[in-house]
Image (tube, rainbow, N blue to C red; front, side):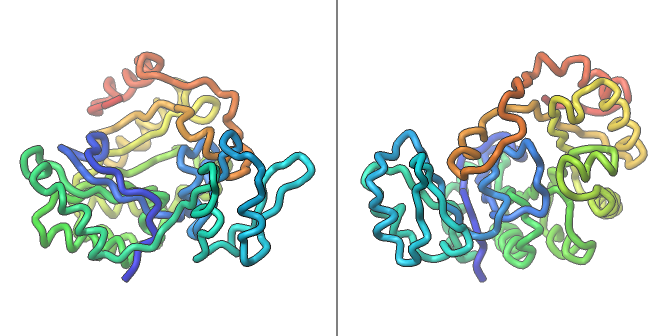
Length: 298
């Protein structure tokens, strides 16, 4: 069994308790306009082109066996992603490191071997393994196998998810997850569709189901300017989550860490000129949740 992974991040301290290793799955059914990991959205392998490193030597163009790489009259790089699934000749031979690939199929055993290298740190800190994305639920068999293997090795397990999957897939995947880091992008059905590409009906149903299992759940709300950052939005989020008997909330202020990735993927970015938010910008926003009995972490 293979998992399509785009990153493995060690010594993480923000994705569950203690020191953790986070395995990032490639592919996501949501297309959030502010996504800080746009390279995670497509399930197939992609190329990242750093124009600042490119000398336009056209080595990649000449080496491509599919004749799939082109430079236009403005010397902008382009290619068709779906033709680049196995060959990495362009990135491997770029003399200036302007090209890199994102997305790699790894076996469950090889991933776990890497995770277990840091087991002493997990044991000392109460940490473990976190699966993130993209959306883990798009690769449910691989995710379930990793979580099962982690439990067999006595690791604490966490799953960061949008919850967007059928109930059957959701149920089968989360069995061995000790903690769910559950993303809620918007309380309003239509606005959720507008900003993420999908309605939130399935998400809320799966969240309600997870609550019946008495899973430990932390709700994560990305606070995005012009999308859900008003005090009125905090009030409506509070009403929704209070009805679901949720207590723990993480507020994630909007940042621009992913902006350069859109350039490297040659994709437009709707939030290019949007100012970042910081914890101090969300004091009043957080207070709304606190006044309604929630434990809030910024």
